[in-house]
Amino acid sequence: MMEQRLTDDERLTLKTGAFGAVFLVSNADAGMFAMIRESIAASGALDGASGVVKEALTTGPLPRLPRDSALEVESVVLPALGRAVDILREKSPQDLAAYRDVVLAAADRVARAHRGVAPAEAAVIERIRGALAEPA
Image (tube, rainbow, N blue to C red):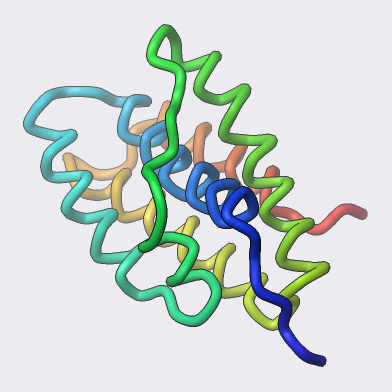
């Protein structure tokens, strides 16, 4: 099956989901030094992307996330992850597992970067995993 190029909006959706997931986990157990360490850990996982996923995560503008509350961020990020799954399923199905793996690896690295995975971080990762899941 021929992969179709993603539009700028579709790439931004993938990026919003991935970067937003990292942001959600990072904020679940916040601390300034922890956030710096976590962002470095996450960038290593995002660097592991390839193909359409790498292009989406490394080109174009950074996503704009709400700054007011974690709930508001989650209300943008989780639907973006779901849309990213739909976009990849339609346009580049061979990259869907890679996107899911990169996002979950980045979220997991962020959670482990500072004193192991806190319960709040684990709960956020489960919501991210749910947003990335195939519909039943």
